[in-house]
Length: 475
Ligand code: UDX
Image 1 (tube, rainbow, N blue to C red):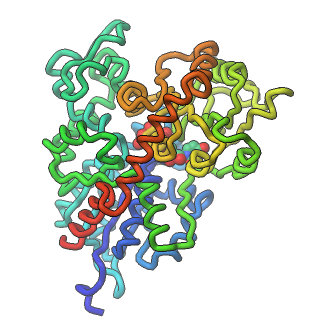
Image 2: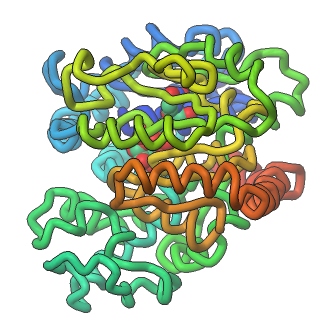
């Protein structure tokens, strides 16, 4: 077959973590639905877990143009690839995987009679070395950042923060306003900066990792963001000064759902879980009154101490609210036998605990009326599109920034950062689920409406995806 008549072929390479794999897999499906060929490249470690827990295998049949390919992250089997070892993974990817990526692209392994050689790379912008590889092999590259635009903008402004003397800071006056981030004057405080900014000096390895974001992201042909214009418009305008070719096409998970509905596809949307989803919670939710349940989950990476866990335990139980709580097997840094996992009589009817949830389905369930979250970006968007108000308890990175926007800018809930006290937890849950529920539901409903409009024909995310596909086809 004449290769020129075959569709363009995109290699998508996500950062090997649950959040980025989730959103970039949805992007892969969206591009397949637009008629492109996609190779989704994951590390061996992610591959093993996807095969074990997700329905990724069934997606192969849904898209003839889809392929899964694997690459090593260069780490030994027993490395946790999380917590303290996360930075080790970044380093290993940068050194070892970079070489393997170039080998893969030049090996001829990715094309066949019915598949063109790769015509474009889409990778996570935090892996800047992928741009070096793309340049070496003469391929165009588009970056994706799977965090919020507001956090990305904070990263872009790190050099200004340092130059103005606002970073590093010492002492514990975390309420000091931050002045040198354009667009965030007036409401942004030290405590809303990513957690690593609190270290008191610039030696934290995260500073090195995120300092070059502005120059790094402007190297690529374009930048895809999992957000929508009505949510982050003013900040997107700031980012455009560095990266004029922005494709805001989120929320990606809903964008995919809408496209599948539009094509009357009967196939379920993908589950890219790296843990086994406990579907029994849906049956439990089915028996609960509308909007009565607080869904509690701190994402895929956050780890709490036993003391913090106990404060949440008492706060939730004392709040009197119904709750569905996800406690990952590795979510508390203590021996699981040392913490209560069984609810007592009286609480067991209004509480349900599981190890991992089908989160999108949970947030879309009519019984869910609030989300106590760590403010990871995927979780935030999943909550926004379903109109579920949030209580934010951020853990690290972008989450401190996201939670400030949820509480102060978008008015979609309450930011509980830097506190972990059973009395405050109880009070905050009551405030969200009872005392101020109408106010929060109204703003959450409005934002959900904007999010949905962005995904309809003519909406910003819809049009930007069309532009992205057109640009890839012209490469
Ligand atoms: C963190 C960051 O906070 C995130 O913003 C960044 O991009 C990557 O690192 P994470 O802890 O994985 O990510 O949070 P989040 O971005 O919210 O992603 C978690 C994903 O896991 C969500 O898509 C959510 O639906 C899914 N999930 C979570 C489940 O499917 N079941 C659960 O029980 C919990």
